[in-house]
Image (cartoon, rainbow, N blue to C red; front, side, top):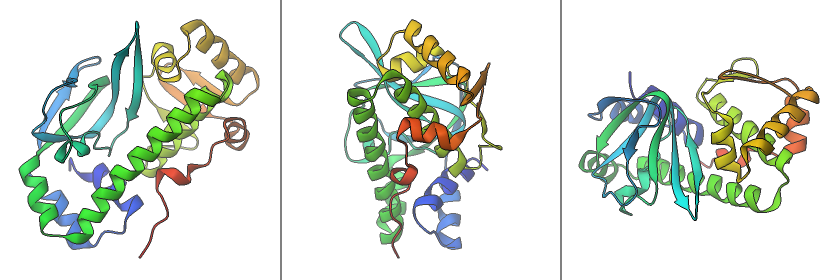
Amino acid sequence: MPHQKFIARLQAVEDLSEDERRQIAALPATLRQVADGEIVLRQGETASRCVFVVHGFLYQTRIVGDRSQILAFHVPGDMPCLHTLLVSPMDADLVGLGPTIVGAVAHSQLKQLLDGSVHLTRAFWRETLIDAAISRRWIARLGAQAALAKVAHLICELAARLELVGLLDDGCFQMPMTQRHVADACGLSIVHVNRTIQELRHRGLIAWEGSEIELLQPEELRRLADFAPDYLTGARRT
């Protein structure tokens, strides 16, 4: 079911009834395979649909000065352009990271769903607020943390987000993220990223082989990164 991870993501931030889960699952969605590096939505494009990640990963990027800056990574269950329901056009390129499958739901279908449910509107709104909270943490990480803590924080955040949708297995996750991606997300050079990852390995905090990343000492890694995952779900209220 293409909506499964998206429903799991919403369920993590807002309790959904069985009927609400059925309504989301019934949304007409067009599936599309996305190649590594393929642009799904371009900066400046006026979107008429919201994209969600079914399998694989996406990231948002734009050119700042003379370098590429990754603004966000998106994992299965994320709907990275939900804001385009009200704010358009896209302010960054949305790009595939490794082989990816995305679904697309027309704005008109989503608006019809939300117009009929105050509670689902709150759930989707909370998702956009959490996305904004993630962006604020990225700004703080870029501006205030040293390289080692920056990379550690990124790894901790990705692991926590994947755990929410059942994709963290005993501290391990699969993600085809290269040192170039880490550099562009953390505002570092590839050389600096390489040294930083080697230091994390040397301390016995992580193992990173190919696309598999393992948190060997998760509590120590979180302490180094000054990472607390509360901003990823927010305080759930009845």
